[in-house]
Image 1 (spheres, rainbow over the protein chains, first blue to last red):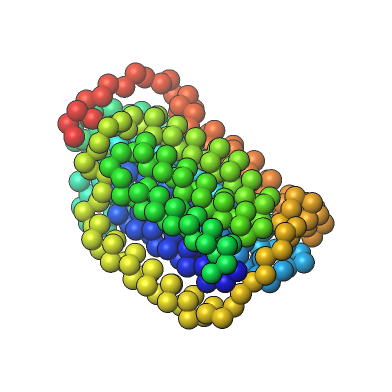
Image 2 (cartoon, rainbow over the protein chains, first blue to last red; image 1 turned 60 degrees about the horizontal axis):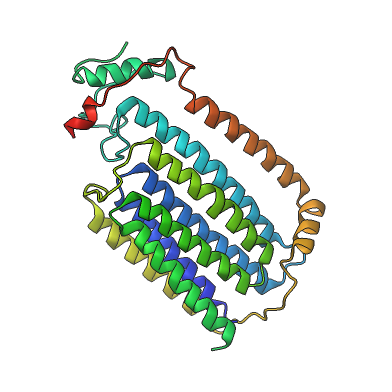
Length: 132
Length: 180
């Protein structure tokens, strides 16, 4: 089989993932697009492992490791998304601008997990002041 | 074109097409279900490439675990079930330009670079026997490090998603969602 077929499919999958990461607003859809990009890399690893007939099976073993790391990544990512949802009542990555340089429209929130519920209360109260 | 190339091309068309639907559909749950189709077609591609153990691990972990986790995330963030108009960001045209540029560069590079490279596909290279021997003989140290990493990710996810760490949980009204 020609090597170009899996390489082209992987390149197209990667660009679709790039589009999804850049164009989507929902944080879960961004995570799905990251999964697509990781899968493109996995396809490349498997294809080149088969091409070179690696005796140590480095490509396929690295693919297994990448799948495991992707599972850990999506678990942690969803935990973070749920925490953001609990504090802000939305997971819109365009409106999470607390870390931006210019004056952010989002209100300040407390530091750490202990301020989470109070920050949500401040958001509900109209977003006037910082939760202390 | 050999038969393997035809089958791989069909699976690749299915994978890329459903991936495009993942990033363009207007319904969140449909995006997760199209992701199942895309990852399943990719597992079929692994089977064509004789990497059968990786294919079944892909089906088990990605289709079985990761997509279910993503569906749980969609449900727990109370996403709209029907059509949602605000799933796409305002910079989607810039994103489209960047993605097309990436696709053009990568596809032209791999087509030029691997124009006359071909690989013989012989069965057995990716069986569970061969991969198990490779993992537990050569790659056993990264394997153990990875298990520690999984444990750390598990503990981190539990600590992040527990709501009773920082104080008593209160019942939260949905006024903020109504304002949107």
